[in-house]
Image 1 (cartoon, rainbow, N blue to C red):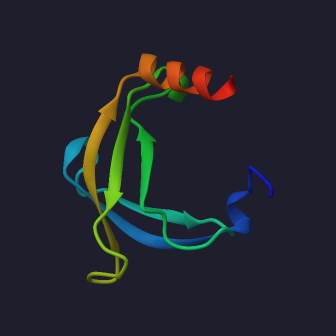
Image 2: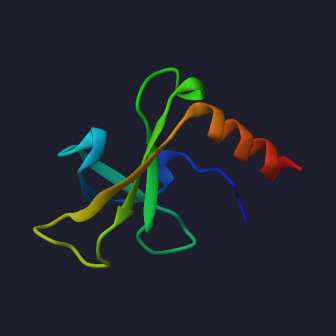
Length: 91
């Protein structure tokens, strides 16, 4: 299975983020070929993304509410934690 896709190859669903630093933001969340609406996703809070904290959001329900999927704020990961996780995954 491929590990990366171009944005034009993916379907998208409308989403609204609730709570946390991105409260009220609207996104088009990609649907990967493995199927289904993602149960969560992360977004960098600053650029460059390599040194940014990431805000994590979780899907509230598997159905549209008011024409959007709703994602609720879960946590923030500091950049150092992301680096340690990536290094651990590579081993």
